[in-house]
Image (tube, one colour):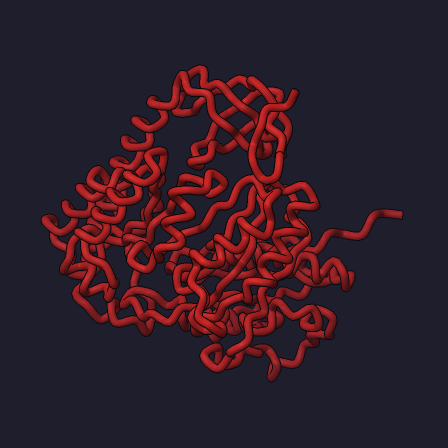
Length: 434
């Protein structure tokens, strides 16, 4: 007798969607739903929507007998796009995709029920995923927030996620403690707008208070990392934890988007260029080993060559290393879509120049690591991550091992290292294995 087919789930986009995709997969497995294919979409760019549609068509070709269920941010914000696809059995909203009972029911074939998407802005509860593990990952991701109260002119995410909603601190601590008990050495806190954490909770605790509470209540947690933040909302407790607790990893990914003040204003961002530079300088003084990544958008409407040059220069001024570059694409219903557009070929050219500048910065950073001895958490395929998220290849190392590693060389854009010792946890602190 052949083994049952594993549930087919494909997710796109951010780490939050990755967590939610794993939650859906586990729910399908629990209910034995090998008759479904679930596509968990992203809406951040037109390209993300195109990729989701492509995945739907491919899934139908590969498994023509399966029902294809589409969910996620793009399904929430433009359900008619996917309902119009003949391959799709049903489109469901973000508010129900994480409820186990959703995946126990019969989806049927009634065309009247093909779209089950509610008003996400009316949702007030936080149905945060509560996972015991992450298949194939050596670090765990814990969602502590979803939604966004801001309205950047280029962004459709609030219409896919709703308003900002936070997970109570006690619930977050409980999940992290369980993950540590299961052997996870590193936890990454994630959210859609994570620095808005707590505004909807009693007492309005900020992200920094949550971070300190986790570090205090889960002493055996060896590494804590936070996902993309809005630097202008970073509170004093968060900065203090980063500066004074070695278990906070020295890597911050910043939602910067642009380096020109007028473009930032037209984006309706809440920081200026000077704010970004000042933040990076402040954190680097407090934590000299910090490494910054950032999101940058190329070719935002009205962007001149002089304005674009400001974004290029920001890479060096802020000392950015890990770049995520997004060629601007208009999203239906956003104010930016009505602004004068930059020609598409010019957008692509500017994105290419941003990436080249980022690759040069990364190259300098990698070269500076040769000769150092650093702690590396191993992932799959012989690659691990330093504390500052820099990738290192270590031969004959196993996924999940935390190794003191000497960086031997830089070859073809990759760091090569050799293990010096295993690192073990002693009340949350790293020490060499004897």
